Length: 338
Image 1 (cartoon, rainbow, N blue to C red):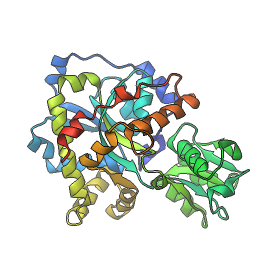
Image 2 (image 1 turned 180 degrees about the horizontal axis):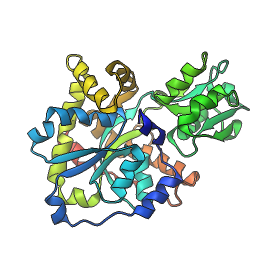
Image 3 (image 1 turned 180 degrees about the vertical axis):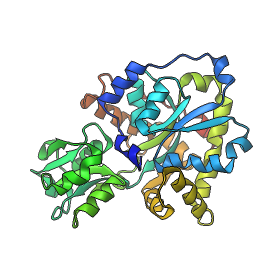
């Protein structure tokens, strides 16, 4: 999501994704057929998901004794492929797991890869120094996407209501032009689009970011219930590789190699990718285990997903509240956490 795919990051998602998933529908594949094939995982351009490239290039899945194939997609296309039964699992946000499920393609979140830690932000034009300065002004977000939720969260913390600002619906990848036009006081975007908006209008600045509310956006590996039931031992091996990935990326001695691998996957210079990585908090399995424990609020995957579910229903992304507990299975993470 830090290249072209970045324009499709949803919360949540949008009504179009629900419709697309509903039209595609999930294919039914027999457990026997699944067992005869490599596990197929769809992944896309977000640091916490590109991180899997390290394990792929280093041969760690083969070492773990699991036959798994990671397939590269634009983000929305990865969820559509999952809905069509073309892949067994997909990397997506916890909110998007609810959206695809509401559209008919249920999944189970078996592990956390990361949470956004600054890559998502509300950017104010010159002269706007805080969210409170937005009162009575126009703010552009793409309705139903993560920056919409981020803005509402920030306004609430600032003692404001949604009605204190005038929301303008605009495409996320057009936010640099929208901010530069002078028609709005602030825009919501994620990196690298947010950085482009700041660079394009000198004096503009981040007013509120995902680092101000850790857990607002969790990124996960979500598996189809059928594949999970048929191949649970294999999925356990996939999850078990993750801590090795996180350690390799975070270790100063090996981080340069990790950045080179990840940057090559998305086609950007390694030094540029280092900046994107700083806005992402990679989670060890031990950290993921704690977050997957049932609880309320953003420090819990359950709580964060409930907030996303409420947001989705309130904004007509889908009609009916989703059964959050049925979307989360912490057993693989708990077994692999050290």
